[in-house]
Length: 93
Image (cartoon, rainbow, N blue to C red; front, side, top):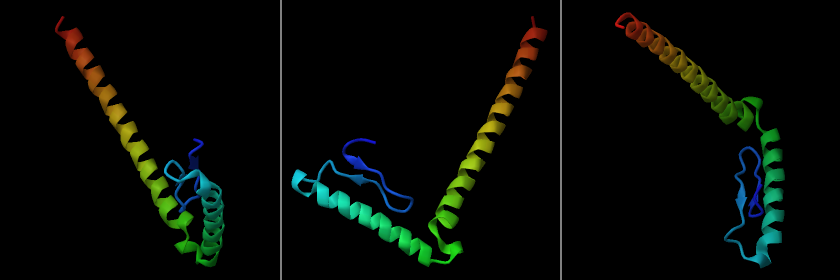
């Protein structure tokens, strides 16, 4: 964590202090942590199917898994093509 970035939480973005004057940094950080606590309370008040971790995070994980599978298939296909090209090269020698 950079000294100018205060980590966020799930639906609360990170706080960038690079443009905040020194006089206001402490209050901005305090407000940021209060926002995180308010966010947590709000999420608890929602039905489970409407909460951030059951909507946005679930979709992000699904996309990551699909990307991983796509990359894996791509690597397998690339290896297969490499093997095929290698065989063709060796036959033409």
